[in-house]
Picture 1 (cartoon, rainbow, N blue to C red):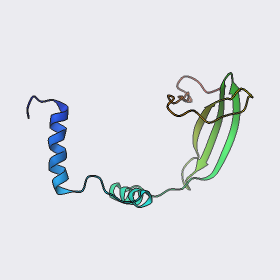
Picture 2: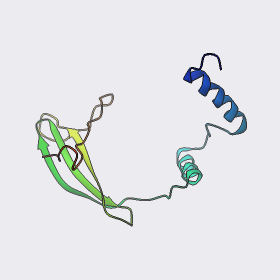
Picture 3: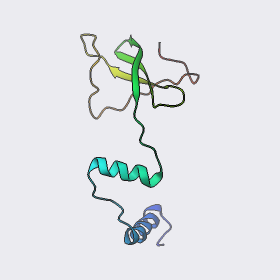
Picture 4: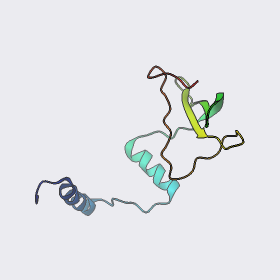
Length: 112
């Protein structure tokens, strides 16, 4: 280890592991996702019964509260926040912009 810096340490580790396994498989997208799920033991779940529970607009922000089920347990909930265009409609976020962060229930309030 030259000076104990992280890049040098992890660079050596990558060489060791790369000699034993293929680090970056060249599988097409769907096959790579399936192989990754199997390797780490994650079941392939599909969202069903997706609902828009409510929508709101506040200034230049449009929000939707979404929910869905994966077949067991309570419904999963999430907030989708998008900027509005000048006509008042939701629009797609511009690429390269930082993501908006949703307020968490019980941790600083809920969207209006």
